[in-house]
Amino acid sequence: MKIRLPLLLIVCAFASSALAQSLFVTTRYSNEVAVIDTETNQIISQIPVGAFPIRVAMTPDRLKAYISNARGGSISVLDTVALTTIATIQVSDVPGESEVTPDGGRLFVCHQAGSPQGCPVDVIDTATDMVITNVFIPGHWAKDILITPDSRFVYIANYSQGEVDVINTDTYQVTTIPTAGGSRRLAMSPAGDRVYVANYTGNSVSAIDTATLQLIRTIPVGQRPRGIAVAANGEIYATNVRDGTVSVIDASTLAVIATIPTGNKSWEVTITGDGAEAFVSSVDSDTVSVIDTATHAVIATLATGRGPFIMLVSPDQTKVYVSNARDTTVTVIDIPSLTVSDTIANVGFAPFDMASARRPAR
Image (cartoon, rainbow, N blue to C red; front, top):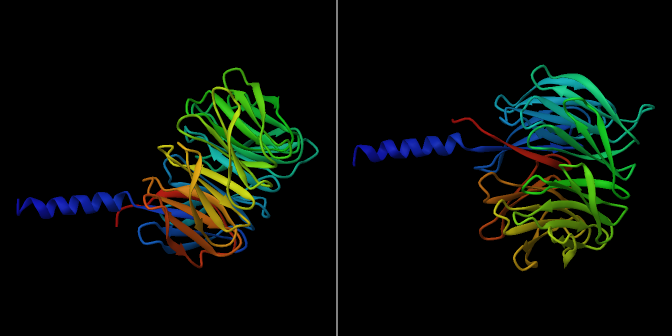
């Protein structure tokens, strides 16, 4: 045992280091991506990118990060191991949300600006980092993107048209599903059989059947629903920005079963992997509310930095990272204790979107 114990400790230390994570944070007014060591909560790099980096998407192997530079009309491609920019891809105006197909082959980028042909969705080959086609949808303002697990269909929340546009990734043909005004954010059911959309100006949530690409129902909720997430039991959580509440929708009846007060301007909602807690950022209250999904009650209200916006649960489900979009910090919430465990300072001006990648062993 005296011989084997040190070896075991070395193996465990190596495994822990090999599984360590880096957090990539876009900082809009610094034109950089901050990289944070999640073991130490220290900034290990600040990578220059294009103008007003707003969104980040990762390849499934987490070796590349794609940054949407909203004011640069470009995508910066980052090597997540070397922490360098390896390519800059020119795309259509005002790139926003993007997502890599689960098979890793293509990046789809939606845009918050139109053209005479409509609103473009750029398709990029992730092997060559080149634009291979443009798919045009109606209108001039797309707000969110979601790709099915089999990589066959891309759902776009078309804010300007009050619809969801579905792109077939084999043919690039578009199916249009009318929902309600201001289609803004998307979420998928655990079984993948439904897509839900928060309709910001329609004050509703729509449910779409992914097998038939048909609207099932549109459910009235509070005023200005924006964030949306689905719990492990199928319940749908939608944040109502104007009301400062969260609507909970039963997946079987597609009816609201609870309305939960949170803070002012409830913005994003994210749910832990086990479905036990929902975290809601309130932009004007500078708080995150924690909801017990079994009782639909707020069990903790945590102070953050200014303008808490995007939230990300760590891969090991022990922390929630909160980007404080009105200052230069990221708040770290410890999930087991439901307390703020750290505030990471000097991340950059207006931290926004976040994604994690595995850091190689040291």
